[in-house]
Image (cartoon, rainbow, N blue to C red; front, top):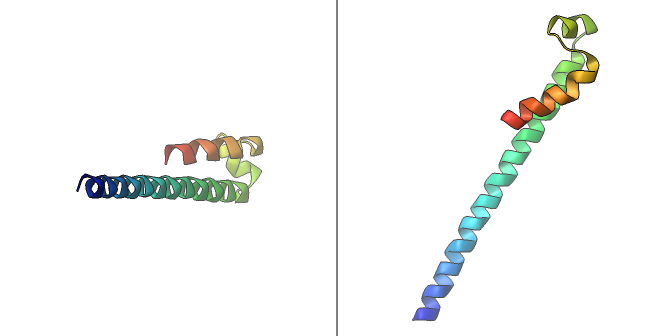
Length: 71
């Protein structure tokens, strides 16, 4: 009987860890997607438009990294 409880507990723990892993992967995917979309959007702007936002081309990736980290 005790063995059956341990097996169920282990299965429940592994399932919970699996869900945690799945959520971690989803969050990482979401951050990567946001990073790529931000880089694409900012890269499509003209230098003048970037300057109006207070950005230069060299700042695109660091800004995208910051935006995706907040997501």
